[in-house]
Image (cartoon, rainbow, N blue to C red; front, top):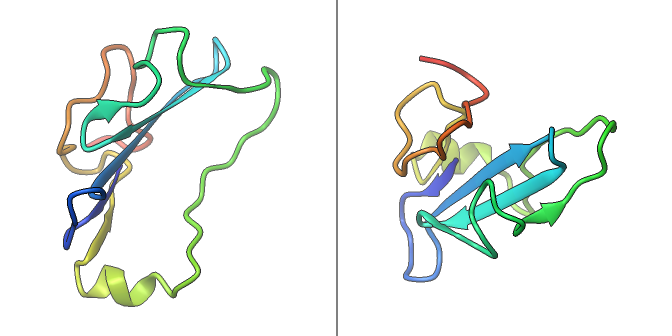
Length: 94
């Protein structure tokens, strides 16, 4: 999950759940899943059998935000702010 610590009402914690078995990508904002939560027919369709990479892209340098603790990227090394969907695992474990 990605979290902006100096959040405004329309931004904050972004969450992503990937279901490679069923070819779906689900996104959430502040814990609310957009278009249907994981395990539903919602989400974005992914092509099965392809290699996917996840990365953060920004028009501004990200390192200063990370150093100032204004941006936090959590792959699961620490507890998530919002509960991960049942059956989904973080990329990293504690």
